[in-house]
Amino acid sequence: MNPPTRRRAWPRWARWLRDILLILLLFAGLQWWQARDLRQGPAPALSGTDIHGHAQSLAQYRGQPVLVHFWATWCPICRMEEDAIDGLSADFPVITVATTSGSPAELAGYMQREGLGFPVVVDESGDLARQWGVVGVPTTYILDPKGNIAWAGQGYSTGLGLRIRLMLAD
Image (cartoon, rainbow, N blue to C red):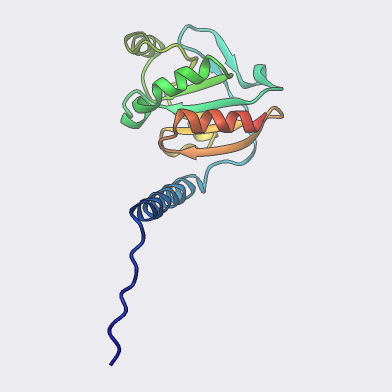
């Protein structure tokens, strides 16, 4: 009778790598599932008034990649992304739309308390969000220089991931 052969175990680093890849695959699948119904193709028009009463329009950014970010003050995931969006706004064109988050004065107070400086279009009724097919926040779109949606995602996105997608959209 032959002695049982012992199967050699994977080294620890290989098991960790396998686990990390599995987690990344699950995360990517979840991101795809959440974004499956988001608008694709040419971006709809976006214009409105910001928290300071100035007109904002997506048309002013034609010819360069732009990040369009729908968020709400009451959304905890949106709060986690605020600093990343603020940092991106220093380097790239960014339009954010605060949906169902209050009046311009309330939003201006929120932005001041949080120390944020990115542009905010007020969408008290949620009409802009509906026009863009947003069913949950945060929802982020990256547009290419021609105004087409190059990427769309719902849920948390890292600042680095958004930065890379903006550079690739150019």
